[in-house]
Length: 498
Image (cartoon, rainbow, N blue to C red):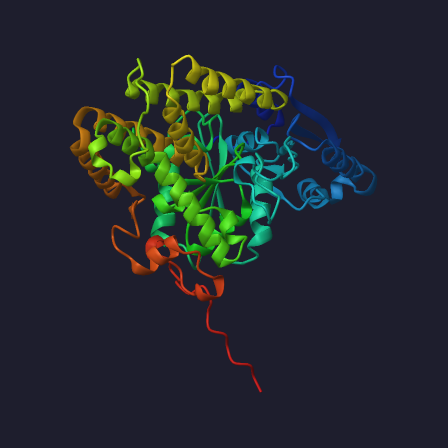
């Protein structure tokens, strides 16, 4: 259940009643990381509740010093204790709340609660200091030339990295919480005058309707609730850890979702072709960027079609012209080719997973061992044919060149699907299987956005943007795929006054 729907419990004017409630509710006195500091200010009991590990102790000590010094400078019979305390809370973020549920939620997020005896409200002070790493370049989105910072697991740092690149007063960061137990912070970011208002409302509505205990897997859980992907292997949202990529998509009218504890940022809505672009293309000149994009396209096509096509030609060598008669097996093998291809594909995926789970100092040695065992020795003993290893390796390289990890895995499943189609139905199997795959992709919609746009539906300007890396000065309007509220990227300048 969303925390906004819970029944509110008002703060009692009796500070002892509030203390008893907090002991039963969150385990004050039982959980070692939850603490309370009791002091007297102008003869009134004051209680400061905090959560060790998520608070900055230096700020808390400074606030307590200011509160204790009130006794030396004020007289209780002449002053309003609550107003004096409020005035002495030397912090830029101080909020007054009147229900204990909200106070508890804030306390467990790392803020401190200040309760005053005789008052039916409490002060919430933001002294959070989340543990985490410094912004650094993401491993999966490295560029030769460009920014080296990246998002972290801290949502506050992530919104700041975005603000650094988007200093527009119309940039909105709306925060809400999801998870009855985890109460995870989620930020919805968009440009108010660019993003489609209906899209923003749909996303916020879907997020508020999420009913779950917690989202320890953060962004992936949110994605599954948001786009309801089911068994579809193709990614319906784009992930990135680069602030410059997020800023670019915000300017195009996309809506961005940040989840606390995750460095991966969700970009919506996206199409198939949003997953094939890389920041490196825009860090080079248009000619080089277009060349890099086409090389990546060739690698992606090879990762899907190379092995099924080669296997088709192996089964039907009469389909090959004389100039391509070198394609195919030169020696007979005791193991069926289809089995070799499946095993080699599984071997590539095992290597990928082993590289992820192997400590960095050992990954090089693991690669050398795998190359020796799966490569030359496997060929020498007759387990694999040399051609099988060659084509599987080329398809694997094309898979690694795919910018989106999720898309590369989906393409691998498509490759296996086409491989079995060729095995069972030969040439018609490849033709019909490829047609079914394209029709399936054309039927997908990500937040009501056609997945194969700009090819289906046809958009000439969008196709040019996909095929060619257009120079930025020539790109004056936003693409229609996001239904932007304002389609002008380079507004006409006002004439200078004489």
